[in-house]
Length: 312
Ligand code: RIB
Image (tube, rainbow, N blue to C red; front, top):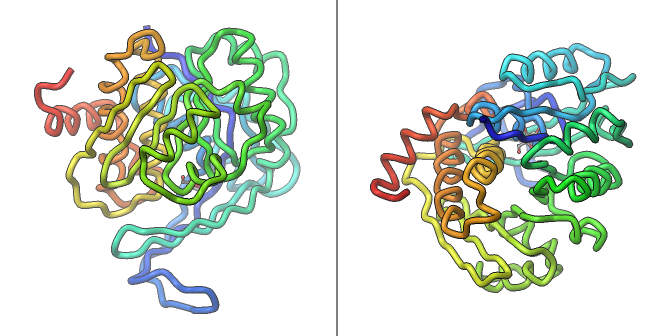
């Protein structure tokens, strides 16, 4: 049976410009290419999970505009269950994204309809309760994130929180998180500490949650849990073109792998899940096009096999 993943999160229409370099504050630079791409951390992670093989449902909100229809169509095309996707008055969420030749980016999000996802209904609760993993980010109201996590905890569904964009987290949410996924910047913000070595960040975060996955970009990922496990997984060596949705590819695949391999119950499975997630993130980064580059299962498996030959 496929892993069952529910995502409660954002959907944005990404307005993406590539440029030789990103502008500094107050600066204008001439860009090169422009495209509109369905995005949003929540929708990206839902599509990533579906492409990675999950039976995935998305709970979110889009506006009553053309962008909203595009965002809905994109989720449906990926095979995501959109019965929990509301259409609300006003504009859809939008993200302005710049990508430079070194594959670095900046992102500014106008939440639009995402801000209207203020409560969950009985059907959302049933979907969360029937899932293996609930996947959350921080682009919808925090009260909704907490409510979703609470429903998952009550039903025994694993809560994976990708704390992006970076924000301090209240204790009532931290107490409901099973697996926290953060990059180094987000880790420092959540732990309310200065940026530091991965081991130091992991120690600080384990004071708050039982399991932490720290993404390290081209260096791979690190993991620690309160049972004493410590892992460092190198990333596949690739030529990165666009890292915009790579973190979403990583997190979506992580949720699928976590559910499929029963990682919560089997410590040895965690390393395999992290390799699988690293392969997904790298497969995404080596292609342009933000969310259009989210890899399918075959692409993840190919890069996994090529990179971690012989590993389980
Ligand atoms: O993680 C990438 C995503 O962040 C983009 O798709 C953008 O919409 C923002 O949510």
